[in-house]
Length: 546
Image (cartoon, rainbow, N blue to C red; front, side, top):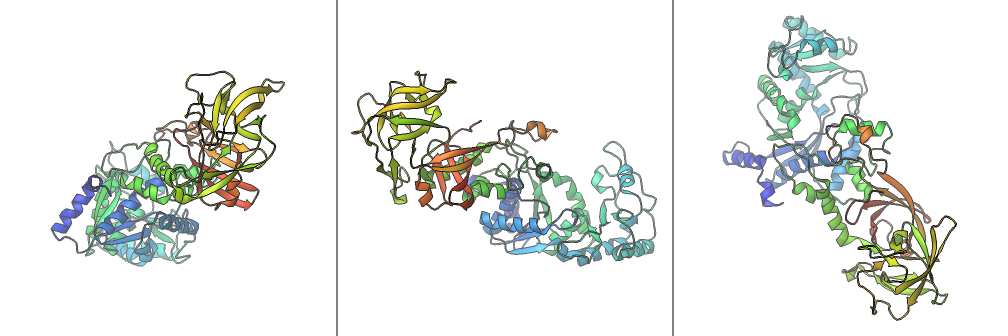
């Protein structure tokens, strides 16, 4: 990790704590709620916590915050574990907040006995209304001063399932006049009769995140509880709970800025909206910013880790250009991807002076890495080129084939366009060219080295389907946009046929490829030999709009 990047304020805090011998061992944790898939924003916190524990020979825990059985699902637990392993991050322990439900319940009883918590019978809406606003103080609940024995009896009955959902809840007794709304008697426990993915039917009351999270940190002896800035106002409650339950180990909470990326939404709630309303094809749709989607699209874990290593850890909210992430992906692919030729928008070319036989041309699988081997590519007198690689008249800075001019076919011969045939609509149907048989990988007078186009044999091509992915949203900064639907890019997915050289059929189909001059691609679905679907991982340079 870059030294400049490691000297963030959290590292400095840990150094001071170790110097003062405040902790014997550094312990961190990543506490996802299993109600969705991990996205790149989660990965920032995940990597930071794991990196710190590794740097100081400490302990890193994965702890599932499973305190709300309504939305949580075992499939999300499995996906989170799978994604963390795919990133290559080592976990020392896997825990669940539900592992501590018995202890958390006892701490709630302890607060009641100290007259620091009470059972409230007000409805959810009335509680919210009585809390007040930033400009108006809250008002006490009529149940706030119930005697301790009444609160204990009601809480035990809540645990045994005597009451319906939302009829009662347990609240902390703090300060309804506090300038921090969170401290105005927050809810600690609520009634829910949903099946829990771990405890099944054992519990019908569940602690809130604010109550369970700090206690779980203390039980696991987490030295540095790291979270994003949205929880900065919760820190005072975190400390209040730890202090008043009188637990021996007292962890400390520290906040850092969350990750924001251009052209991306990193809100689980909003991502869930996109999934549930079918704007994308699931959590692993390659247009999504989830780790599962990145993996399916063809992003590699090492590039993602390199990106996470080199983003700043501070308390300043900002938006990182997605090009930074893409540059790591692209650089890795440029080094490791095999090269083949493919044509997306075919235009037929007939080489009028070539014999009607197939010639096999030897080509490198990578232009500068001979260790990646060679392949034989069939060359025929009828070939396809990209339609965009031909113009009738010369245009400024155009480097393709022009009527009357020469161009190099990638790794093969120089050709010259002699004649074209159009259909009744005026669209070019066929180009008739002359090929120079003595120019196989050799130059000729009147030819510019830059003018190189790719091609495939009309007789030997392999027909595949490709998913051309672009940004899901039209504008770079959509964090504060209220209407996401209006911002969705209608061209975020374009499905096309692609003619590729038959070499692809003989390679390892699960490798990553550069379709020369088009982009990088990765297999999405391999059902049948003649029904291949490839996802475009990323373009070669700039984003293709259509």
